[in-house]
Image (tube, rainbow, N blue to C red):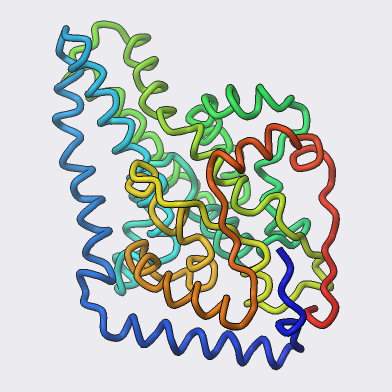
Length: 342
């Protein structure tokens, strides 16, 4: 995990390294078309929206396979809109227009995900990205639940994410202005009620309870990998104290990990959350497709400069967390001090 001795450079050297990498990445971005920079990911989100009507109609079928297909389509579309869409919108990576960026944030985060746009931006962009793996700030500690044992956390807890998310959002509305709170409540209610109404009136569910159960199933279809990915890519890597954190390029190369490409998760979560997480943390405003395009440039540069480029498989991380759950998810992680990097 730690860089080779030749990579332990002072702050000025680290800043020069980051500038050099930025120049290389910007060269790639500059020659890329709009389709590559934004179009591919916008098309995936548009296809997910277009797939919703067939998904709801499949739930009308008495054929078990067709019904299961409908649940799968709705579940994958839900996570594509709520995870990929919200993530890109929060970083302003869907469009270069500030006005449309604000609209997409409200749509994907509040209507689709049932969370608050303000807290999504603050917690993810201003804290997690600015202080990646810094204890007490961006250390992914919000994902730790020490009161749960390893099996409950890894296998059962993810099923509660669709229920917990809007409850947490409502609780955090106390911290925002009344006008913002009313807007958020309205948009969250619109998203939840629209899903419920479509199940009753398009899919033909006969009772409110059956519609609510179907909502829970589709909204938790990919909850397990969603929770796992969020802990796999940071927890267990070097953690830093707020007063001795390393320079940005070292912080990101040491504290972030890439998983291999996984087709379903690449589609639903986006490359920046799966196989290009290092690239995403270094260049958070790039879209998923652009993160994938600059991945060879970033990986080659870090290895060329003898800096870490962390990669591991989903299964290997799962085994690690299952076998070392106490150390990783319950106990306070040790602080890594890197002489010359703070």
